[in-house]
Length: 448
Image (cartoon, rainbow, N blue to C red; front, side, top):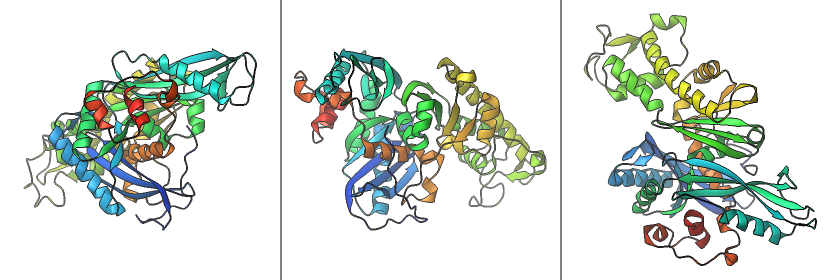
């Protein structure tokens, strides 16, 4: 991944300085808790500016899968229209992030003989074509097939081999696979909202663009994106995503645990978790009583059932709330630890763990996770971007910002290289029609 280009002077408000825009990108992050959209512009000088963003409660989505096409389509259209209103402009196509669909990461190495001569552009193209022909999706959809870095006679870490001499030229290719049907459902929901699909991007890749530095990706880092229903655990090293595990648990499970423990409504449990919850207990928690009802829910106790164990004013002890949260959070962190160990990210060989996503906004979570995992942990947020509103400069929106950064960089996909040498193939059905008005290579990218 190349260094992200961002504007140097952030603005405090959601306002955008006047500048000539060379490109405009639209992005939609379809989550189980909320659906968010962002419109970003790139100026003629290469600076990136957030023109507008918006979000709304999710509908028709469960654990990253479309479960109600009509509801999902309406929610996507609504989120995009809110972003368009803030931006003062509209978009016809968007990049979309996918957090579910059985994502799987694979890395392969391909080499060709050079014979000691100088490496030319044609050699690199030939190498990438060889790598492209070796992709084995096993009946699944290929979301990405990207060259991470090149090797010269087995030596790794070559960013650009052109003009160098070598006996053998190789490339490490990162391939991201997904189940085809959920991807088609996600695309159809976006298309039904009268939007074209530029590309479907794996959520861990998008979040990595927002939260991780190039140095972290080179040295080794784990990125944990805690969503409402799904937690994606990914490991980066040598500049690429090497491993990925999806855990069917998230911050929504903590909300459900709170609602069940106190016998209250889910929206009340969500508010209690976000406003008064924490992953770390303190001695004063036993003395603090928290009202179950919200400020806009009418008189005390009139907005719902009396909470289990509450006092006559329908208040619960903060210590009891935190006890439920930490118990549920321990289960999630335990599964994260197992996933990291399965991918070899533990002990002295492990590096830093970066937590992001809406679930990472829980107070004290970094300290809690650092103690439980015995690894350094920090919270990951998107870089400072001109025009980004403060409400969207949080871990919960890092994937959305990263999706825009990914779109701006538009990384090379080996299936788009050397199309003049590619064998003729036909694309049929609804998959091809999704890209009927897009660039040809984007169709190849998605459905080679």
